[in-house]
Length: 255
Length: 255
DNA sequence: CCATCTTTGTGCACGCGTTCACAAAGACAT
DNA sequence: ATGTCTTTGTGAACGCGTGCACAAAGATGG
Ligand SMILES: NC(=O)c1ccc[n+]([C@@H]2O[C@H](COP(=O)([O-])OP(=O)(O)OC[C@H]3O[C@@H](n4cnc5c(N)ncnc54)[C@H](O)[C@@H]3O)[C@@H](O)[C@H]2O)c1
Ligand SMILES: NC(=O)c1ccc[n+]([C@@H]2O[C@H](COP(=O)([O-])OP(=O)(O)OC[C@H]3O[C@@H](n4cnc5c(N)ncnc54)[C@H](O)[C@@H]3O)[C@@H](O)[C@H]2O)c1
Image (cartoon, rainbow over all chains, first blue to last red; front, top):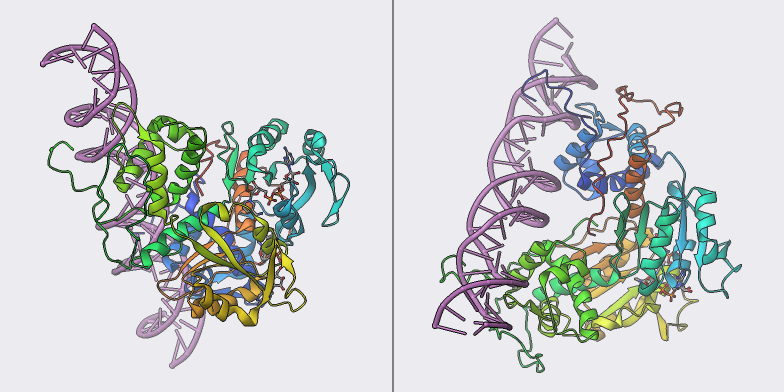
């Protein structure tokens, strides 16, 4: 750090980079596993390997947290677990509602990984009257009419949308109006929300298309070329410039 | 442009930025919707709004594709749909296998969005003998023993893993050994794969934790402060530096 | 108490991605 | 034809994220 007096910069304005935030859960998972094996300390090198990241990156990430390791030794596992949990807000309980209890919604409701980290399924909501009252994963499904009341009574601030795409924006609007400020969207739609509301999306179809893109590259881009039916193009372009495979696929990308 | 002769740089070494690739499916979805409404052309501004991105970004993205719009008019919808589909490799058929037909795997198998874009569920695979032969979404589940044969017979290069975390790496290894080079992983584990194999992960738990982080920020970071039980810290740090809410939540981030 | 060895914390440089802002391209009207 | 108006395509500046490389911190052993 060159000047020995520059010590405040860490933990500075509490500005943790978004990329770092996205990796904290990864570290937490690896640390939890170590904790369960009663490993007392871990080096940045080991932990980075377990989390699948570069060790310098990991150290820099932790430096934002202001978390201290011990030089020559490594990081105290329990301490880090606590610090990261605290930073992520996992020391408190987060009630969550799932809207749209179809194939996916039911799977999510049954998912055990929810409760394991402070997330509690407060309610399951669906518009289908036939589902109302039916228990899914031990929780009775409630009707959409109750949505606002459920949100308010339980102080829910995180909502999961698993309805068909057509209903997603409407459901989103109601959730937001009722007080939800974080949404996890599984429907393939772009949701528009007011300032201050976070939306994250999980889109299977997009993931597959990205994989297909790279897959196509790998297989030498052997476009049949003779594929007919190009719709009337405004400006015809020559797409004959097929390069050979260059093999430099960037691979994995953090979600 | 500037120099009227600098015309080759677009479509250059076929180096489409990863960030652009990740947005192409988004554009494609918006364009498909327009196409269904028989809209002939669309401006970058309109399309960008529909896809939820900045219009300059969209134009730059398309410039990598080498796709031409018409100045003063916009882009030809049908032409763009075709070009993007082609670039993403969606003009060909991609057989996909799903391994682990539990709650999530079954939901995925039932998901209609698969077939809509060139992805075909070639097989469902599970280790549970009790499931073998049972139809899920009209497709009989096959036993894990058949995995290698299935992959090879169907020329599968994309695999989806929806097994418990403990089995994921092992399943992954078998898939890769059998010839799969792209994997979509739903299990909460870091998969290690050889060079040349792409892995993308979908991790519900991580998404929720990221939301929780921002949620905590919004609610003024009112840590109870009196929360006991801090595990023995190697280097005790003062975490009394709780700032008030600074309100600068970075908000939404594209997945 | 000093020497050595390990591992952290970070300064620095680099590359990618985003966004602004504008000149050029073309459509369209006169 | 010529002018006007719209919209693209992109140069350029900037900011964020990544990874190298190393000095400083501290543990450990003699
Ligand atoms: N199943 C998957 O694996 C999968 C994968 C990726 C994305 N998706 C997306 O997730 C969403 C759900 O998929 P699914 O397979 O579970 O669909 P589904 O049809 O099985 O379930 C949808 C559920 O939403 C309910 N619903 C409809 N409108 C509603 C409303 N306005 N309010 C509340 N509930 C409402 C329906 O009653 C139904 O129970 C879809 O948008 C789908 O595209 C699903
Ligand atoms: N359900 C969800 O909403 C959800 C959400 C996020 C992540 N996940 C993750 O997805 C995975 C599956 O979740 P789930 O709820 O469907 O679990 P599940 O227990 O319902 O299903 C797992 C299935 O995998 C099969 N299996 C086990 N070992 C196997 C092997 N070696 N080869 C092939 N099949 C094997 C089991 O027989 C079972 O059918 C888990 O890793 C879970 O953490 C699930």
